[in-house]
Length: 392
Image (cartoon, rainbow, N blue to C red; front, side, top):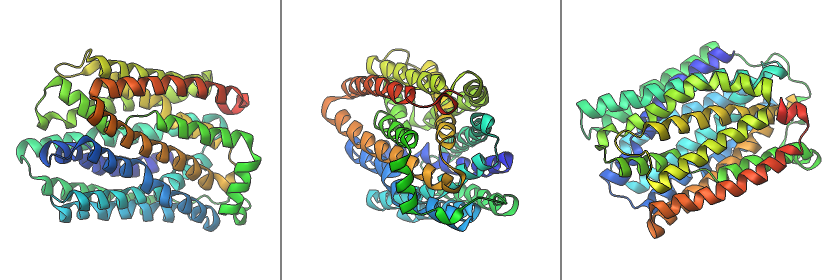
């Protein structure tokens, strides 16, 4: 099951990262959108739309025990949005609307997909299972920007061709999911899955509340990928057609380190690996604030950024899965991703405003300070969780 879902995510991420790796260039450098305007679109992309339907998708998947079908609806919606980008042309308003709908699709699919992973994995292997999936996901994040780079090199400014190629890969991802992935055979007490039941669980489970709080505050301190790469492009002076290679550098490291990081988390401790990953993100912020090691092709920042992703994304989902009962697994994960999404939405708008108002070094420096405070709070939150959840 892990491998089948991995192939779905690989194809979908080829599609998504073809768009993601060129959308900042298209909006900021080609259409000349301001950092604040881009921050608003990026905030919608990373947060608001995920929050709108992510929880509803989780509840439906748990109640109907149709995790695959709900996930497929989300994947399909994002697939159609690639055609929407083609139709939007140079209108930043329509692009913002299409990206919002695209993220609604992501919100619908993420929790059911992660529930399928966790319900088909042994408790002691949760971080490893998520790591295998995230490694394949990162493979798509690697291949997507490469495809975008090749298209941009051969067909400069032919963004329509890029959006259409992205649509084809997204369609293949939906096909793999529907043809090869099956729903879990048994999920106990599925009728308990409802918003009321999930909120009751949130109120009654101290550990689950801590996980949701943890994801939300970490999201608040996370600068989006697009802003990181835009800052690196500004500092390095590289031509815009090479912009997708930043995504390639990060995805390569993520793919290589994801499985080792997951195994390390299962054996050594999930808390230590998670906090260590965010400490690496802090080093990236330092390099962005000071302009250190960012000239030419900024290899070191990209290596650190990829290692941060490998040590955090799957590990946080493993921590959450260990405290959520099977019948509420999708709903609980949707609550978590909603908190993360809202945090990232705020951080994107805030960073865009800070960059436009105070400049790049000040914006990166302030987020470094925010991350330092968040890491202290996160360590305290994790220290109050049981060993079997936060530690291993």
